[in-house]
Amino acid sequence: MGDKATLFETGRFVQPSGRDGVGEAADDAAEEVRQRLAAEAGDVEAMSVLGALLLRRGDLDGAEPHLRAATAAGDRAAANNLGVLLHQRGYADDAAGWWRIAAVAGSAAAAHALGRHHRERGDEPAAEYWLRQSAEQGHALGAYALADLLEHRQDAGAEQWMRIAAERGHREAAYRLARALD
Image (tube, rainbow, N blue to C red; front, side, top):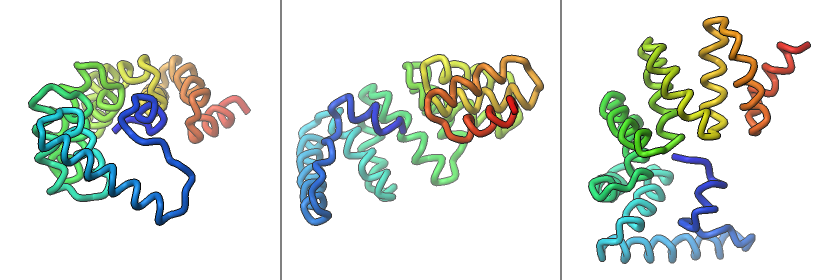
């Protein structure tokens, strides 16, 4: 679904105010109402944001129509999130189709998810291709997953990607790199 810091930078989400739990809940409810009204008026970005909000909350039935509508209008974040939703429902192959659409449109998170999907199915060349796409776009999880795949093959490039993932804040990558260098 993308990392939270990147999503905040897009302006699509309200920054946390540091208020108490009651105030934050009221702010969240007001934001949801704003997004619902905008989505009902046909705002594609609002459909995508509302679908993502409901998906994070675990309301898959509520999220799906908003994500499908935003995806039909070409929103790549919605396509990625629709893939997440379908994966959570157990439709991994359908999820992969939506991740592919989002990845081709430039989503590093979707490329990571698609690479993981291919690796789980034993298609290492496809996994490497999509994980490399994700890693080269700066996605820490993509860099780590690529490093793990390359390490499994005993490829010399594994250390470089493990280092990149560690430098981007991936804790397991930092641990594994330190162990390898020790």
